[in-house]
Length: 220
Image (cartoon, one colour):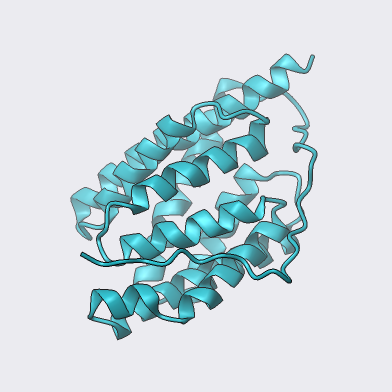
C-alpha cells in the first residue's frame, strides 16, 4: 500500500478564472460537430503518441488543435501557449516516472509541484478553474503508480470541465468513463489500442460538443 499526500496550491497562488462561459458564433450542425470531433480525437491520440516518442513540438501542435476545437474563443497564440504548458507537464511527468522505479518515491517526488504549476498555467490561459489543474495533476500522479484512485480525479476534472463549458455538470460521468477507456487502450501501446482509442475519443468529443451545443441552443 502506498500512502499519498495530496498536492495543494500554495497560499500565495491566485488563479485567474473567467466567470462567463464561452459564446459560440453559431449553433453547430451535426456535420460540424462530426468534423470537430474527428479533429479533436485524431489530434488527441496523435498528441499522446508524439509525447511517447519524445517529440515536443509535434505534441504541442497536435494539442493546440484539440484546444482550438474545445475553446474556439481564444486566439492561436494563447492556445499554443496553453498547449506548451500542457505538454511541458506531460514530459515532466513521464521523466519523473522513468527516474523513479519505487512507487513511494515516484508519488512523493517534489517535481509534482512543477507539474502542477504547468497545469495551472494552462488553466489560466484557457480560463479553467484552478481545481482543473489540481485534479489533472492528481490523476496523473495516481496513474503513475497504477493506483485506481486516479479514476476519482479523472471524474472530478470532467465535472470541472463541463461546468466551465456548459455551466452545468452535464454528462461529466459519461465523458470521464469514455476518457478512462481511451487512456486504458492507449496504455497498451499497440496498434489495436491506437485504433480503438481513436474511436472512443471520437465518441467522447461528440458528446462533449453536443452538450456545449445544447447550451447554445437553449440561449435562443
